[in-house]
Amino acid sequence: MAIVEMIMPKMGESVAEATVLKWLKNVGDKIEADESILEIATDKVDSDIPSPSSGILTKRLFEEGQVVQVGSVIALIESDAKAVTPSSNGTPVAPSTKQVVTETPFTETKVEILGRVVPFIPSSTPIPTNSGNRFYSPLIKNIAKQENVSIEELDRIQGSGNEGRVTKNDLLNYLSNKTKQPVTSTASVAEKPAAAAVSVSGEYEIIEMDRMRKLIAEHMVMSKRVSPHVTSYVEVDVTNMVVWREKNKAAFEKRENEKITYTPIFIEAIARALKDFPMVNVSVDGTKIIVKKDINIGMATALPTGNLIVPVIKKTDTLNLLGLTKAVNSLASKARNNKLSPDDIQGGTFTVTNVGTFGNAMGTPIINQPQVAIMATGAIKKKPAVIETSQGDFIGIRQMMFLSLSYDHRVVDGALGGSFLRRVADYLEAFDIKRTI
Image (cartoon, rainbow, N blue to C red; front, side, top):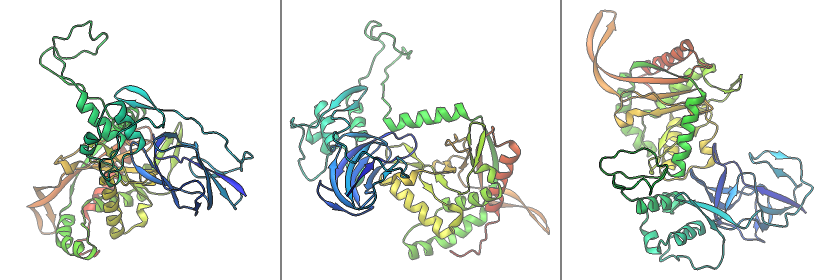
């Protein structure tokens, strides 16, 4: 019998660790390949981890509530298959000669709570217990114990996790809002040495960023530092697209039991333009340009917490408009309900963000590294416009919008970026008003 090491997989860009929420299998249980063994949580998504092999679960190396680094061995499976050790990205590598891990990687996990690092050691120490059927992970209970949060308080916190579960971020945000204190201008210099400069008039409050916001901030600063950004704009007549959607949306919703939005139409036009201009569908590695064969378009999506995440539609150019609509709606729903899987947010080659949702005419989006371009779609507005016909020009009311493209000037110059943006606009303006879906 071979011992297969189950590895904590990579859970997305910038994610280096995950918390064990719940073991779904006990030691001695028989498991099948790809069957879920445990639930984990990161600052971006909750997810189930499947078994890499069928066999018997012989050892669990981490307890519920512990934090696991990506690439760590989390369980051992006794399998009839030839022993393999998957890498952190899921690719099998040479078999390991060490068949059994005899000790847990560590027994103490440290958790950062409002800027303080406290230990989390699973023990019989009294911690808050559930007053009803709501599930709280050991990590949540331990933080609550450290911060003197009663079970009644926990019950009042609105959870953003799977099935309304309270996540680490939910609890830390609650604690931040609970403990922040207004600071007046009467505070002495001695009480706050080396403090940052603040206004000396009135009151202010200090709100600590949650971890996801910190990661977003770091990613945005890095992108501006790495890529010289240039933004181009084009105004587009999308009258045919708007008329077509108004004509078909009711029948589509009745037939498919879901709505059709403008987003899949934008994504379809972008995918077609990327095939025309493949040098926009690239990334940069030092002085090397990596041309991506697959077109995987990410769509920036707001989470209930107010943070952003970018789920990705894979092989976008192979989907028709119906397939794109279902993919967009599915990913948007999963994002709203905090059910995105790690695979849902990986592998993007281009990103689109809809600033028109907030009534904005246009935007200057920041490139989602390691991509080299991102497009913002503005609000659609009725405007008077000159319409050219074979009988002459006249003024008419048209549905108009702006597209803006930010691109990395290291590899995408103005001619390429401008031509690509214009091509997307051309595809939208030529939308077939008689199209069926």
